[in-house]
Length: 266
Image (cartoon, rainbow, N blue to C red; front, side):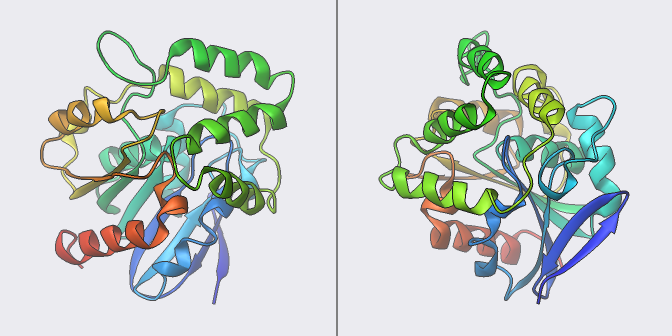
């Protein structure tokens, strides 16, 4: 049975029983993206999904300064005690920040197709800055068209790309559109934020799930990320792109279950 709660102005939704597992979504999305995936885990865990500030049911809750630190600060009071935080894409940036700034609440970290630094620069593989600039330009003209293009890039390479995009769109459109200000500010985060200097300080057990065909977090970045946090576990799904929990839900759920059972203390 699912129930909604409100904490610090943020709406969260939970279902299941067991250790708390919290999911944060990516840019332009909302927690609806986990609708089909979370039931694969809710028999073992209490799964909570959180719309990032400015998105979904939290579209009207936007911090004055939109940064990874301010998002983590807003979400922190809404986290259950002793939880594992799992962040997809942009949500993974926020999850990493929460592991650093809320170690009293976060006992484990999972990132899905995420990075401490999304944009490429000085030998660091990532998204071409020109692509992000183009997205920022297009965003002011047509949100839906920009989102569609972003979704197609996310699914690119996956054998089920068409179905993946369709699945994501049908899940997120049942929730309110994001705040235009938050949408633009969150896109800017993908260009600006850089947690590379600090992720080595994360002390919680960490699982990083990647898709080998991901063009937003390219496979050439995986070794670099693991070198910055050598104590983390990394799993690469050979046929997945940027949304492995959509294209390979059972496999992704199994990887998370094994991590929770072997690396995270109850």
